[in-house]
Amino acid sequence: MLQLQYIKDHTEECISRLKIKNVKDVEAKVAEIVDLDSKRRAFQVKADAAKAEQNRIAKEIGMLMKQGRRDEAEAAKAESARWKAESEELSTKLAETEQLLNERLLALPNAPHPSVPVGKSEADNVVVAEFGVKPDLPADALPHWELCAKYNIVDFELGNKITGAGFPVYKGKGARLQRALINFFLNEAVDAGFLEIQPPLMVNEASGLGTGQLPDKEGQMYAIPLDGFYMIPTAEVPITNIYRDCIVDAKQFPIKHVGYSECFRREAGSYGKDVRGLNRLHEFSKVEIVVIEHPDRSYAQLEEMKLHVGGLLDKLGLPYHILKLCGGDISFTSAMTFDFEVWSAAQKRWLEVSSVSNFETFQANRMKLRFRDEQGKTQLCHTLNGSALALPRIVAALLENNQTPDGIVMPECLRPYLGFDKID
Image 1 (tube, rainbow, N blue to C red):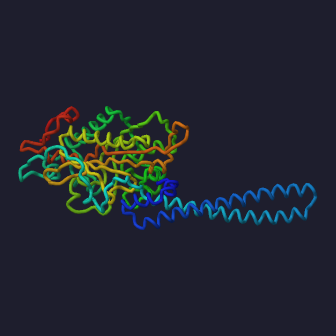
Image 2: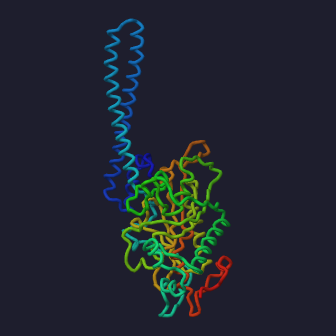
Image 3: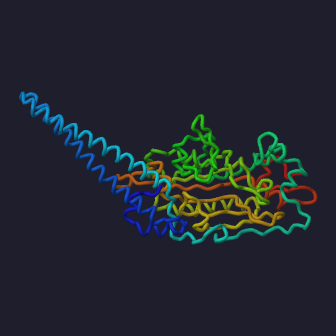
């Protein structure tokens, strides 16, 4: 949630930045928030004055009663009743205005960093770097879903039988490859100074609100209404919420956590050839890195996180490029995001495997996540997170890019975790 004071003090800048995200009717939305805050403050002043007058008269009534001036006391009681009624009416208007203001603030996306490219969709994202060499496969190279069937390592039909489309079953060396990747990614993060966390797979509404997944505008969250829980779309949600309603010690910065989890996404509206196989799932495994950082150092930290993700892809030997997302493709909560995409040799397309984002104070403001500065004053932290990495498309690219007539050769870095060097 954007800070109200920022919206009020830097209204034109706020509008300008939100326009990068193509927010509809942004001037009207920001103006409404400023107006609601003005009304809220006016109601608060009047409500406080009415309450003070009510308290003053109450003391006066007691004094009059002690002095035996009953007629005057009765008149004061009538006046007190009028002030009480006015106080209650003002308190109701104040509560309604505060609720509406909070709803409008929650509905407003994060303001992107001024350097975020202007654009309408993913077609306007900017490639900022490219690494690795695309493998030269023969014309009859198989896409990963055919390789999965050929080597009996991922069964999509069995997953459909047990649950439904988008819930594959990993078997044999496919299951071992999943486990190997998870352990490799976790160990690499721990070696880089991240504290490993094993988070819950369900969160409550407060946690979903804290990181910006709720209110769920796109219907992506799996909800459990009976208990008021939500299946997590990423480990970012429970891990970041560890620090909800906390004042952290500034000496701890950067606070770095890593966690593996299953991720659950409805992926409403997904269809077509781009969702075949492992390209888009409702349940998938992912290792997530989360950092709580000082505002002055968050963008330097973002660069460090990019280097970490890039290092993993280098070790896996996967060609990849890095995209700086434009305003039309950046998420509701993000101020700046870089996507990592690997080359899928048989599909001849790029597959997203990581998003690394800086949310600045947006999540921290929702969560009341703060630190004390050198003057002892509380300030909001900056939060960042990134996939390091999401498994399905990594597996897809590994299978396709490393296929040979004799089997699928595994990267050197995974072999100690796998116990084999080839799927055949």
